[in-house]
Image (cartoon, rainbow, N blue to C red; front, side, top):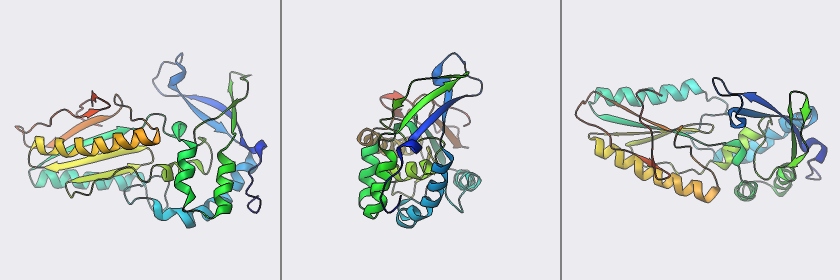
Amino acid sequence: MIRLSYFPSTWKHANIVMIPKPNKIRTDPFNYRPISLLPLFSKLFERLLLPRLLTHLESLLPNTQFGFRKMHSCPQQLHRIIDIILDTYEKKQICLGLFLDTEKAFDEVWHNGLLFKLKNHLPDTYYRLIQSFLRRRTYSVIYEGVQSQIRYISADVPQGSILAPFLYLIYTHDIPTPKSDSLTVAQFADDIAVLSKGDTGEQVTTNLQNILQEIEKWNKKWRTVMNTNKSSIVTFTYLKKEKALPLYLNCSPVPQHEEV
């Protein structure tokens, strides 16, 4: 398969099972998480292929990304965020945290966009193999013993695939990150936190709004969407008089919360 750069079409069909999200209304199809049940041999081959791809692509991943990576974990990323917040309290500054939710992250990966990002970093053999892996994938949904008709997939990396999380990280590796010392980005897979430190609420809000505009441009270019309603802002400070100004994402104010 590696020599021919060909991924068998029979391995590219997924039976989708719908896992209900907790505390959600079950009559709404959007309240289910689709998981792809893929052929065993497909997963075995992906497991063998992944280390070969890492050799060429791992250097692309930003230091801010802690998801699906060796020697990185969610607790480590949380400690990193908490250290910044505690430092803000000690210096009697204000820290504004923006926590972004990517809408249907794995389901919205644009195949041509992903292949464009892989083109200059992979040997031709591996590039054409990933191209074969992504193209003309099919699925059918199984629910309560009934199976739907087969449909073609136009965009996604299949949830349940071994390669999918890594390909998603590569697709989002160039999302804008601030160059300022007053801004910190922390990523875990499709979750993004941006912390802004400063002496005034106006200062931290302006810094965050600027990076948010850059992220919006990136989203538009690469066909992804941030969910404004599921995103949130939290203010960390002892300074009672300093208040953060509203932040806007997709022309709508980001909800403010006491915790996240």
